[in-house]
Each structure stands twice: as C-alpha cells, then as structure tokens.
Image 1: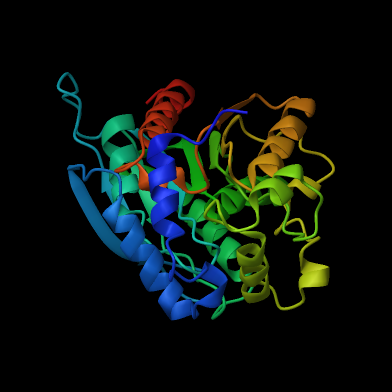
Image 2: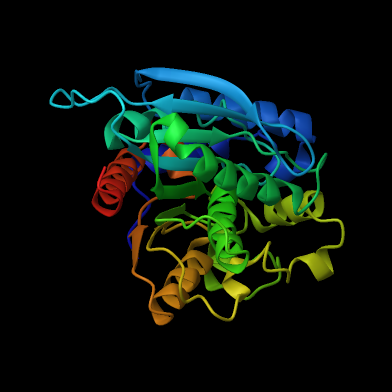
Length: 323
C-alpha cells in the first residue's frame, strides 16, 4: 500500500498532537468552530467570480439560505445571456458541523475554473434538525434550481450535484430522490469521499484499518455523528434517504465521478457505491487518491492531493456538462 504522503503526514501530526481532543469529545459548538478554523487555514485559494448573490429559497420546513456564483464570461462569448451549466454544492461536515462559509472558496473554485453557475446550499444541520431534514432541503434546492434555471442564466438540462463526505451522501441521495419522485433530471454527480452506508456497524475493511483515530476521521466520530443525525438510528440507518448504497436498483442514475482517499475509513463504501453504479449500467469513474485522508479536498491549500482532486473534478465537470 502507498505510504501516507509527507504533506498529509504533517497535517496528521498536527491533528494528533498531544492535548488535541478527538472530534467526538467536543461539544457541537466547539466542533463547528474548530472545523471552520482548520478549513479556513488550509482552504482552496480564493477565486474571483463575476457575481455572488445571497438569497433564500423555499424549503419543506422553512426558507433555505443559498449563495449563487456566476463565472466571468469567456472572452469570445458576447452573449450575456448564454445559458450555463449549474452545479449544486452540498457541503460536508458530518451533517452537523460545516456551512456555506467553509465551502465558500470551493464554490468559487468550481465557478471560475469550470465556468459554471454554482449554488452553495445552506441546508439545515443536525442535531437541531434531524434526518431527513437536511437532505430534503437539498432536494428542494435541486427543484428550485431547475424551476429557476433560465432566470439564473442556466440550462435546466445541465444541472449537476456535488458534495464531500456528508455532502457526497446528500448528492447521491438527491439523485435517487429525483429518480423516484420523477423530479428534475440530474446530468452529473460528483461524489467526494461520500458516506454511502449509515450503518455504523457495516463491515468495511477500511473502517477497521483507518477508523481508530490516527487518520483524522474515526469510528467514534462517525458514531457521534450518527447519534446527532438520527432520531431512531437502528431504523433510520437502513432508510434509502440515509444509505444510498442499499437501494436495490441503481439503473437510470446520472453519470458519476466518485473520489476516495486511501487512508479514509469511508474509502470502501465509496468504492462499493461506485461498483454498484457500474454494475447497474451507470457511467461511473472511481479515482482513489492513495496517499491521503478524509477531507483532503478541503485542505487543498496545504495538500497537493487536494489540488489534484479539484483539478480532476473541474475536468470531469467540463467533459460531462459541456461547460
């Protein structure tokens, strides 16, 4: 197996320094503040965009805050109103910890480099709002984007979804929801180290190998996250709105890029979902960044692997959306 790369190891040494508490040992408020501080220290480089607008959109239990970003027009594009592909970004953070701020620079990066309209979705967080509130917010955002695409200058037939970790879970689930509910068609899904099986006792080798706490995210962290997210974990972990890999029929879902990390306890369930998509006839690419850990794309300011993954994501978005 490829060794942990020096940049990732330096990050892990910092995280695992004596006296630093584990995620699950923190209060929700302290965990949110700590994750935001860490992300902002190692974030993707800031990118200028043509316009950024904050607004609220209708949701199933109230208004949902979103941020919308428009790219600079190509030099040879004289049509101000040429329709653009749209990317819905569902941030990660264990369904509870991150927000639009932690993924501001990632949204800007995709907007500028892929030439997309990006919608950064501020879905409701647990534990204040339990499953399935957050994912229903994300589905509502997809429906709103499709209904308002032309007004935004976007193409309703070229809407993609992306997310990291918990946001990858939401992206996968939203695609399934749209299929089941005959909702807006999603053109592409970009899943970064997604949670695909919310059964914390599911048997994946990577959970045992990398879940003891020395590789950023631990099994204890996942258990803490599940307890916050669910009201009745034993029942809800089997719900398809929580565990997309459990859906029997995955045919008809949009093409996908699944990115995983070699030293991530979620590695194997990401591959499991990619394999099941492929077996169902879905066009899918699975790329594993062998030498790094969970969350690495959010640490691209410090990790070359994160920069490479973001560049790959942009390349695949352009290829699949004609951006």
